[in-house]
Image 1: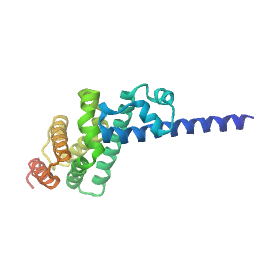
Image 2 (image 1 turned 120 degrees about the horizontal axis):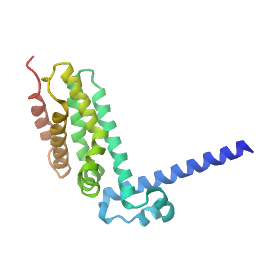
Image 3 (image 1 turned 135 degrees about the horizontal axis):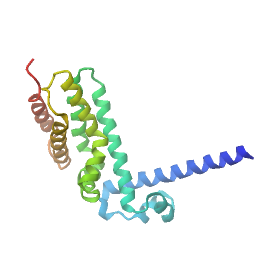
Image 4 (image 1 turned 60 degrees about the vertical axis):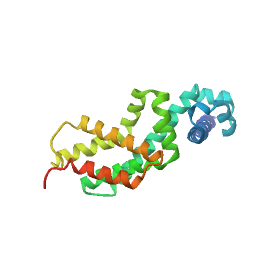
Length: 200
């Protein structure tokens, strides 16, 4: 009997997780394609094959679903940046290639619409920045800390430098998302970063 109860609890948990993921997947697709203001939560639920009540149970509102989609997408972006950086042992190349991966994300329609256009307006600047700092911005700060410790860049407070570079890269990613040239942005980024290096 106890085993059957445990099995039923596991099945319910798996079903809840599957329902939540179906809503996240469909919500992400619609937010990316249509923009936040044109998405209706009931339509997301119907397309995901769940009831409107289930959608409200998991996310409370369209804004709640959007917040969860943004968090998931930010986490993926942070992982993409970290993966690109970790291909290199050299600390400087880690910074360069992690930063380039972030810029390349601007070519992803979901990143463009959800993270760069809608998220700051819908969530507010402070919440959007907090989510950014938990993902890709954290990797940037870690990279700059390591470079400072290794004296590859001048000893300086890392937080203001990380914020300056993060802001510049967010603007560049948005420019790329709106049709700007990725290669030109990468070249400009290399020149910008080169100015941080201490003389050999």
